[in-house]
Length: 173
Length: 34
Image (tube, rainbow over all chains, first blue to last red; front, side, top):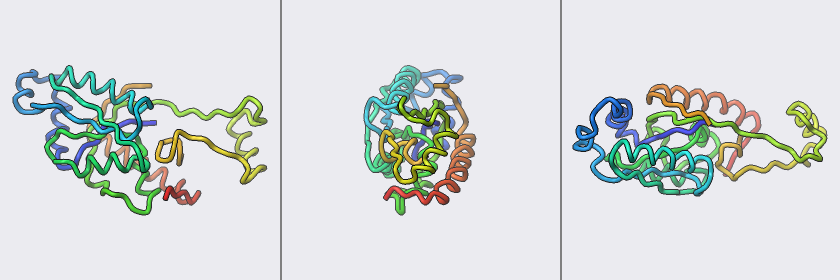
C-alpha cells in the first residue's frame, strides 16, 4: 500500500518547492514566507490506523523542520471522500494538506459521483509503502493464494471477506 | 513500512498508473461502493 501527501492543486507550485527545498534552505528564510502559522493535515481515516500513524510521524518531523505546529485532523467516512472534499474545498493558502493512500487513485472508479474533482487536488510526495496482508483461519483448507482462489470458486457465493471498512485500501483491492 | 520520498511529478505518474491498473480490475469485477 502507498501513502501520499496531496494538497489543493492551486498550491502545488509553492508547496512542491517547499518540500523539495526545505532541507537545503535555512529555516528563517521559510519561516518568514511559509508556514507562518499551524498547518492542518487531514487524515480521511479514524485515529489509530496505519495512515493515521504515518501522518502523525510525518507531522512530528515536519513540525520540527518547519518550526510550526502540524495538526492532524481526522475526517473519516464515505470511503475517504469526506476528508478529500474538505481539502479540495479549503482555502488555497497552503495550510491544509491531505495524507491518504492510493485509494485516491481509484475512488472515482468506485463511486458514481464524488463531492470533489480529482483535479482539485495535486500530488506533493509519496510518503511510504507498506504491505497488505491476506490471512485465513487456521481451519481453512486454503494454504496459498492459488488454493484460496480454487476454494472460493468451488464455494462461489459462500466465502466471506473482511476488511477494515469501505473505502480502505484492502476493501476494493 | 518503507519510507519513500518523491517529487510531485513522480507521485502524479504513480497515481495515474494505479488508476489504470485498478480500472481494469474494477470494471471486470463490476465493483461499486455506492
